[in-house]
Length: 120
Ligand code: FES
Image 1: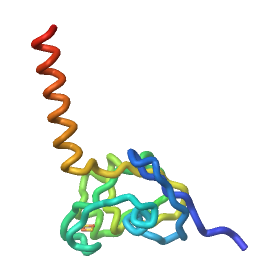
Image 2: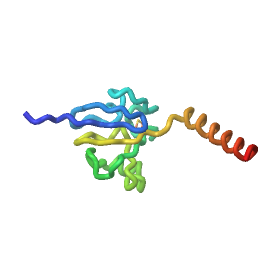
Image 3: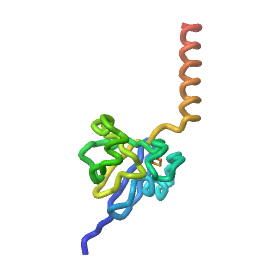
Image 4: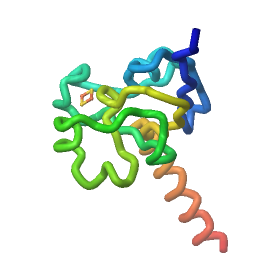
């Protein structure tokens, strides 16, 4: 019997999970313990679940009309809605940076730059 399970890997978390073909990336992320914050729970209302495929020719099914309309040109950059994109092969995706972690990282970068400017 053919195995219909595929590995989905998440960056930058470095976590992966094996899921059945047809599983959404959002469900796979939750199974892997990767947090993707959402508000609409898969109704294509919040657009907070955007992830980037590391290869556009990757192991997810092509977008349906609704997802295509929501994402427009960013589809060409490999952006997909995790709640809609369904696994059909091995795939690696990059998840968005947590807003709090991003704020801390930017603050640290600004502080480092200020220190370098001051001390030379
Ligand atoms: S979960 Fe809201 S658009 Fe995907």
